[in-house]
Image (cartoon, rainbow, N blue to C red; front, side, top):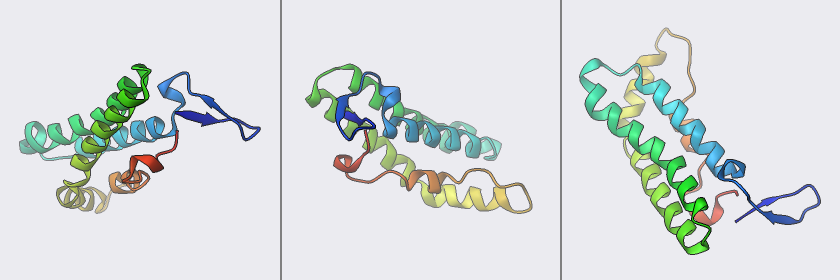
Length: 128
């Protein structure tokens, strides 16, 4: 995949850290950890752990796929990342419940669902 240059030309990305989608996925993971820190203790080893693993899996799969240097492998790993992203998203009802509880009378933290909404659901639309 490519990262745009200032002259409108595209050059191959040398590092996964240059990929906009990887940078956004790191923000997703950070927001997920921040939110799940406030989960009740009885959810620490169940829901919180599941969401954290899925959120960390998104940038991990992007990085691993980009490191493979094969466009086919990279695309396959992007699909894995998209699956992990869906896992985070489809727990949104439970997450929204905890966000509402977290923000009642407390300082607001980054909203996980706001961060999640940055990701198009079609990997062909992801920015690289």
